[in-house]
Image (cartoon, rainbow, N blue to C red; front, side, top):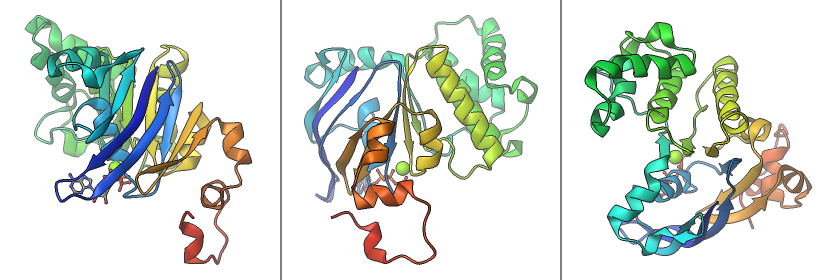
Amino acid sequence: MISLKNISFFSNDAQQILKNITFDIPTAKITAIIGTSGSGKTTLLRIIAGLSEPTSGEIWINGQNITALPKAKQQQVRSKMAIVFQHGALFDSLTAWENVAFPLYEQGTMPLAKIRDEAERLLQMVDLHSAADLPIDKCSGGMQMRIAIARALAAQPEIILYDEPSSGLDPIARGLICNLIQHQQVQQRMTLVLVTHQLSAAFQISNHFVFLYEGQIIFEGSADELMETADPYIQRFIQPPSRSYRTTDLVHS
Ligand SMILES: Nc1ncnc2c1ncn2[C@@H]1O[C@H](COP(=O)(O)OP(=O)(O)OP(=O)(O)O)[C@@H](O)[C@H]1O
Ligand SMILES: [Mg+2]
């Protein structure tokens, strides 16, 4: 279990991006973090991954306050954690297999002769074995996201943080990504975090839901609790939009 306790984050220009964020990420479940653009989802994910430091607050992983540990120890605890960035963040100048191989070269533990085979095995896991030699700019958005997932799997993670893995994809590509993520939870018992602004994508596969609004948590709970919430702002995510609505409907009060 990962627990965030009173996490706040201020930008360099003293803007408060995250405000007293407290919630749990249960082990071997899919936790969806939902919020509109600019609500702070990527900032929060970067803090969980250790890529940004919170201004205040604590992150507990399996009963240990890792924010109290020295940097090197924090990295060690996080070594079982991988992040799949918004839009994949692949290297355009490399092929699919070279992208997947990159963390294996960086780790430096695998014999060089084995790296290509391992990259191909990881591409096979996302059903892209045949695309190993394709340059990234020849791969569709859905393929790029699956290559990014294969690259994250190279670190043999137990926890994967996904930042908008299905945004901008057609329904078929989105379905493939959702299936892959669901498989990781059900078959491999991974702990997964799915950041998205699309409740529909999250709803099919997630077990636990967190809503972020202007840097604050306004809901944490199960799918059933989510369906029962009377919060009019969250209701707007759940119900299909009517043809006419007031802009005030999109503001949480
Ligand atoms: N380092 C920073 N310095 C200044 N402002 C920042 C910084 N990082 C994020 N922000 C601001 O914080 C807010 C939240 O940004 P963030 O990228 O976390 O949102 P998001 O929910 O991921 O949005 P999207 O759905 O568009 O990806 C935005 O207003 C953004 O401009
Ligand atoms: Mg984002």
